Length: 441
Image 1 (cartoon, rainbow, N blue to C red):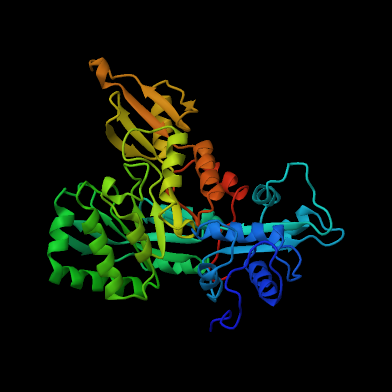
Image 2 (image 1 turned 120 degrees about the horizontal axis):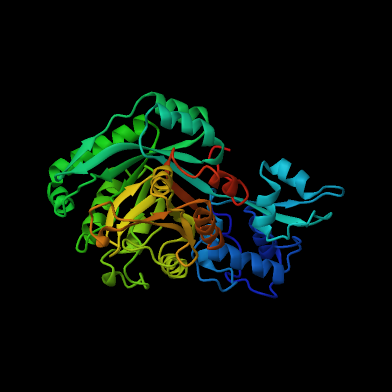
């Protein structure tokens, strides 16, 4: 049902007043955007609330309520979890945090309040939850144990359902205990279709050419995901030049096979800092984002670690073409092993990287430019000096800065992996920054 059909005028801006403005203010308040008093006058607080809504949903932030904004507001369910909490007389931030089920530190962070602020009667607090997806490196008994420890800070969990290799799709059958455990904690489930570790450059081309078999594989994946009550996540990692259209064709075939399936896709960080000119990156980010319900933006440039400022610039460019409310920032909790020429040698877990550094007698140092821990391992006895290896490690501070970027850019949430051998201190960081969103709450 369209709620706005009988209202005129179609555009509301600063100074507008009447029943149309009153309806707009009530709707903004329902969605967790603070328009001030519901008095039917389009003042500066209503203007600020409209601006925030437009930024969150990837619209032009002009502060004017027009047809595009009405179409958004007329949806019964919006992909955002936000509310306004008004402190009652005698209430403090501690009381509000307890009522909202979050920490005082997170509430201060969401509202940019100083650490000594306790709140006052009538203060309006914005509370927003984020979609936090966790992916494990494998689902053995150790992973199930780790899930029990961190389930309270997650919104969803990823399990493998398909593997692309040699131009075909292998359907994977997960252990029955996994979906049962995930549902026990009230989490959503995503089945990931990923590329084999040593995927050949021609694999995606071969796969897309086998259209008759591909349709059967896609239907099998959809049936598998529905049996598990899971969404489908297409994660092929870094896409080689020339495969952008093939990735789009594969995503389109999945949506055409069953439009009701929840669909998520990983988009690589663009080579160009202006991804709207998709021909410079070979991937049409805007069209892929339209096909997907959620978009995982790879949290690193597919090359040597770059400084965080350059990364943030690329991320802002991506969010010009990918709606922020669909975007999940992918954050790697592990480590990379590179040579002196910055070539990738291997990927490992946080704990294994820290152990390797200390066994070599090297203490990891913080690289403030790249916002990662760095440990240069000396070459082994008898090796050439050029065989020196460098560990780039994502610790709690690295995660903290990337989560901060996702929150301040109004993204829907984050996807973190691999869980099980991460820096466990990062969970305290997350508790003080974001609140996990529960779709069934």
